[in-house]
Image (cartoon, rainbow, N blue to C red; front, side, top):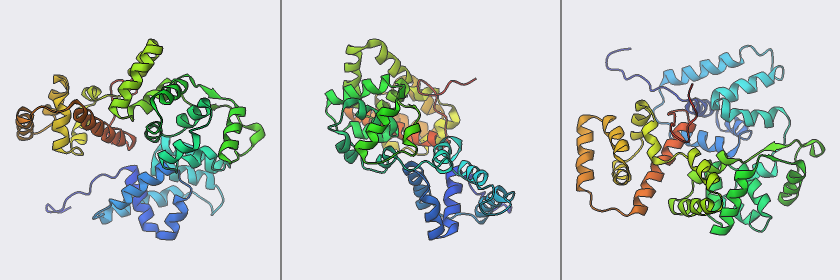
Length: 339
């Protein structure tokens, strides 16, 4: 590489999937996307839309990996299970690919629950609004946490509290309950008579959903849970990732996060942060940038608590998105234990 050339940035797995789909052409890319769930389509679609100035070597890298992954296939339709597993895992990462692999390779039709993931949160809330709270809890536990949080936002406080408590106590769901839910959604599971128990919910799921609620709603809900069951509220809080937990993210992760956060949002968020968080941020900035940030904080007048909480939530949303993409590792209460 000549001295005046800039090295192509390292591609994430989602970037690679986006480049591959852009290279396939509209109709072929559409055939691939139709086998994906809403979350995967959204992530890959955003990556495709944001693609700018893709380097030739990046395209060659993606194509080389793709060709290598199919090179050991004897023919189309022979050994295709292995090819699909490799392709989806390379494109989306192992965790995200597993659910899709099960649905595609095990013959599972799109269930009524899966169809809800494509709907707007308000529409999902309307579908389940007059159903039994246990059915509501199963649906909320099944949705991705961010969508579940938005769905809960369309219920009143009493209903929200009931649903979150039920999500916390969920462990497995009996086939009869799934059949009832399918009837409600006017969908049919594959293999009704042999439907197995499904693991849903739990305290960790409740904590994940709570992370995506508005600060005022989250605070009110946690207070109510604490009044009913102080031990449960403590367990949920222990599993939630809150703004102060950012001090447990490694320096490289903080630096990556700061590149995605606007200075205006950062200043407001730090007005309500403790000194440990502030020092963590300062030490991961250049000397000049940290001095400017300190000046902005000193000159910033009083800020409403609600504005601080909104800014912190915005940063946490970015952090969770980056964690899902494998770009940073979240530490603290909501992070996985490292060994």
